[in-house]
Length: 89
Image 1 (cartoon, one colour):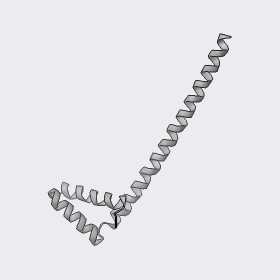
Image 2: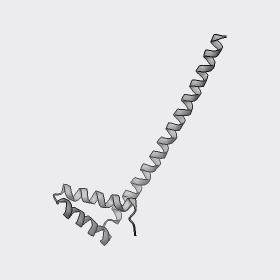
Image 3: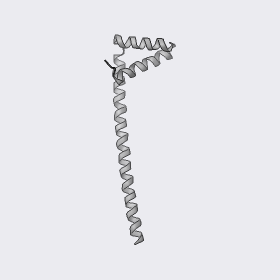
């Protein structure tokens, strides 16, 4: 069965933590995967899942902001064109 994004992030974070604590890369990965299989990363997975959801919602919010800015810019450009046309007549 494939791992979720949250599970992968929890494993990655644990590997990084173990490497900072002094374990070499291969041992850190082995320890993190053992902990994952033993169910010791469940709280980290929940935390990672929450972080992923927050990131996705922030990306959606940013996309909406960009879209709104594009619409506002087009509207402003349209008004400027109208003003220029009226000034020439």
